[in-house]
Structures are given as C-alpha cells and as structure tokens.
Length: 235
Image (cartoon, rainbow, N blue to C red):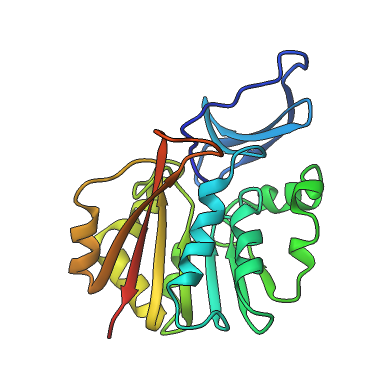
C-alpha cells in the first residue's frame, strides 16, 4: 500500500465520505474514503492508495516479470491495496503461474469484495490467486526457495511506516530471509516513495545483484518519481 507523492484530492463538487475504518493488527487504523467516484485508503493524514493514480504499482509487477527468465512460477505480493499490483501481475504472468497475496489487515480483503469490488473487477476470482490474511514477513520466513518473485508494497519505502514490525522486512536478516525464500534467479522487488540512499548496499550485503529504477509517481508525472529496487538472487 504505497504512499503517493500526490495527496488525495477530493472532487470539490462531492463531499469526502468515510466508508469504513479498519483496525491494523498491533495498533493504528486505516480509513476508506470516497469522493465522487474516487476512493482512497488513508493512514492518519497520509494517503496509502488511491483509485486514480497507480502507474508505479503496476510497474512493480510488470518490470519484475520482465526481469525473470520466464513468468510461469510462484509469486508473492506483500499488500493487497486496491489490487493494481495484483492486476498487473495477472496480466504479466502466464496462465500456469501461482500468485499469493499476503495482506495483514482483514478488512482490506473485505473492502476488495465490497465497496471496492468494481475496482478489483474479477482479479480475486482468478484461479491463479490465493489470498493469505497474514503478515508477509511470516510468509517469507516460512518459505524456502519457494518463490520466483517477491513484490513488497506494504510501506512508504524500506521502513516500518504502517507497522513498526515491518522493519523486519528491510533489515539485514530480513533481506537474507527473502533471499532464502527465492529460487535461484528469483527477484525481490521493493516499492518506495523515496530513494532511500544506502539501501542498495544493504541488499548487496544480503547477496543480491541490485538494480534501482525510477518510475513516474502518477500518470503524466515528469518530476515526481517513485523508486523500485530489483534484487536478483544470483546463487
């Protein structure tokens, strides 16, 4: 669930409605907001996901698939959000792939089948998709050379914005855990709203071959960019 560079801008002709509130395991709340036809998921005053701008979320999946030898294998997506990364993964990976989405907050899955059902369309009914209501850290820690790709889109970047425990994903031993969960040649892809200088070296110390890519933050953006690290398991 990424933090957008552009804030949630409600249609001035429509009021902002609070559709629902979700409790985050461990503390905190998410709010599902609606203004006209637009939806937003917010954490405090920060927008985590909007239904209008999702260029970089789709790029996370599409560019990862382009870096694999084939797109027939098993994929883990950390964070369901509004399903844009999942949708791009379904478009990019083959009919033989298996895609697991680990979502920490149960109500996010309820929203996907309820007020956001029109945004998700038929993505959750695709036979390749499994929804695991769990901490993605735990899914990674339990895996051994299982995944061909791990896509992490659960925070503002490589830090624990939503949940302090998410720091486990980006620390040295967390990255080594992700390395162990990947098959040879597999890719760990991490989305970020900012460059996080020095994170490349942390990934390299965990054994990865690293590529950092800038992508538009939203459709039509020139100067505002998001960042994706593609970390390949080379052993």
